[in-house]
Image 1 (cartoon, rainbow, N blue to C red):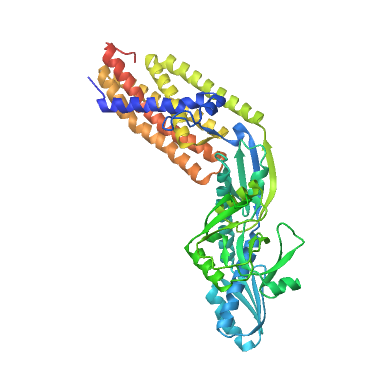
Image 2 (image 1 turned 90 degrees about the vertical axis):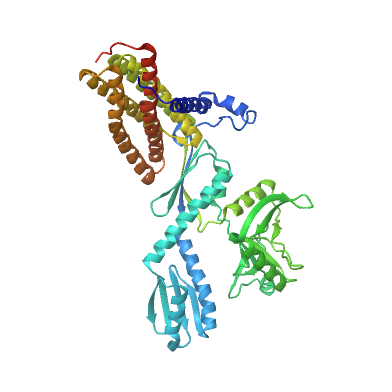
Length: 520
């Protein structure tokens, strides 16, 4: 008599029970789950499958990244570093200006042109020079420009993701589209105004020394910039272009209140920022310094004493919401380039509910027709396959709940495909059993051989489907990934149900009923 080891039986039953437990929250009404949130122990299954934009509605945003600004910033950084290098080499020049994709340099003596080019190459090897006498024009190479663009896009996507995650939006889809655009889908968000404000703010923070004399004159000299005050744009002060500390040196920023009960933002520097700020504050005691955010001066206090504790606060007449938003932006980091909103669409929940209803109907109809077919053709074995099929759907929902995967309309199509895969595996097994019975084998030998020999074919077909789904997941975006995820999960659960669960049911019935014959 063929038997399944006890430990395998226990594992199969545990998987089915855990699957049912993790899938149950998806069957409860949303209002009921929200009421239970916080009341049930955290170790109990309580997560549900997240619905995508096409199923529950939400907002669709298309942003354009200002790549030209990122390239221009790179040129300005190169120019700033080149000034110091030329000074160290004692090369005199009359003009050094950043260009769209490089810089222009005019040396005082034409004989210094080669030395100037050498100094520029040392700082930035990816340059192409055009020399016309004492004037040197330099442009970034195509490889350098591509690297800057790719870096700006990757950094922008990562920072946008951090900012949106901080707002608590569940399962947003953030992906690159084309050369310089980002697609953002926000399921369940029907009024994205705050999120648009957060992701559209560059949040470039810097601490700059104030040039008091130039501020009094109202003119910015070389190496300075004239910036407006945030609370009073008509009032402007002159600050040094070079920032003492930049926002990327912050390790944390949190909203808080000062001694007067006014909202402020407290921050802490990393080790490098702490040292720089300590050294700079020691060297500039009695001088004002400006806290600049996106080329606006938030505040300009006077340094009374060296600040070496590595922490501080930013005050600027904020509201509670403004201090919370600013701290979020500083924690997430500054965008390398500004973002421009190109397109905005709102998907209503009615369309989503129609899709859910249609998808549910498709799954139910697929299950019904498959159950009728299996029961008609294979009798009792078909009923076993049908039970396994229902459990397979439960397991798919359980795994998606545990992974907090997002279910989209293509994902529902993947679930329907999983139904077909599960039935296909059972058909292979049962047809193989029929062949063994017709060949004169006993019932036990036919069933055992049928499962063993069909397993190779089932693994081959499921592995092919799994590889295809993984390729779709790797190279696809948005809905394509949703289809790939449910297909991958469905392949694994279908194999488990066809090879392990139905085999357990068939052998349990065989040992209990001890049939004399089975129709072949």
